[in-house]
Image (tube, rainbow, N blue to C red):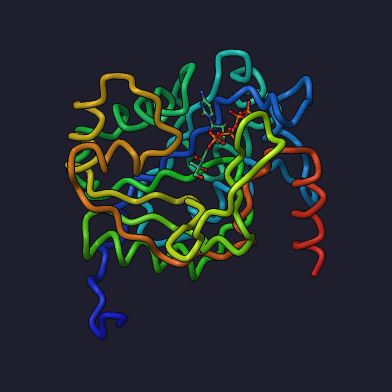
Amino acid sequence: MNDPHPTELAAGCIAAILPAAGSGQRFGSDRNKLFAMLRGKPIWFHAASRLAARPEVGRMVMSISEQDEADFRGPFAELVTELRIELVRGGDQRSDSVRAGLDAVANDKSIEFIAIHDAARPLVRDADLAAVFTKAAETGAAILAAPVTATLKRKLDDGNASRTVDRSELYSALTPQVFRLDVLRRAYDRDRGRPATDDAQLVERIGHPVALVHGSADNLKITHPEDLRIAEAILAR
Ligand SMILES: Nc1ccn([C@@H]2O[C@H](COP(=O)(O)OP(=O)(O)OP(=O)(O)O)[C@@H](O)[C@H]2O)c(=O)n1
Ligand SMILES: C[C@](O)(CO)[C@H](O)COP(=O)(O)O
């Protein structure tokens, strides 16, 4: 049941970290996929502006690659300033990029929570942001997640056989993933570099439960070129 008295988050108590230092291999462009334009603005700007619009978000930190620095400090500089984004250097793995953002805010006494949001997810809904922020305030760790709707198969042998997987308790993890600062700091301090494709996995490893908050399926991650066309169609509604 939804808590009739959700925990209120103080204005400015969240630092948003946007990992934007990936190589976009699956997108197949010679530039960062986050520079692709969506209704006149780059993908990263759509993602960042939705977080920046929330009153709970007091700091915006984006992890960028060395090769993209000239773009963010040149043609994109006005947009970066408009959203008061602090740029930090990302790393080889997504978690290295998140850690760089975490290090930038770790000693800021005004920050109680960290919201990590893929800069590749331009369509996150404001209502979903409010819901995952509220749940994180209640539990210390919460992520947006969408129930799996397709029938899932596990590949057997070389793919010439398969088995159906029970999907009844399965969700696709989305972002933002929101954690109390001390929880995420502890998870990253304990991280010994084992692969992790999201931050919730690191928090699970220190034994802290991570709550799932129903997220809209249109909070898609721009991964392949066709995802951009889907995003354009959604915004054109
Ligand atoms: N070392 C990395 C890898 C990924 N990311 C960011 O994490 C988000 C989700 O990653 P993904 O969609 O996989 O982006 P890429 O890693 O760039 O894509 P690919 O796996 O196709 O190369 C993206 O905003 C990406 O820029 C990052 O900041 N640092
Ligand atoms: C964090 C994430 O978006 C949750 O689904 C996903 O794990 C990112 O994976 P990627 O391979 O870095 O895109």
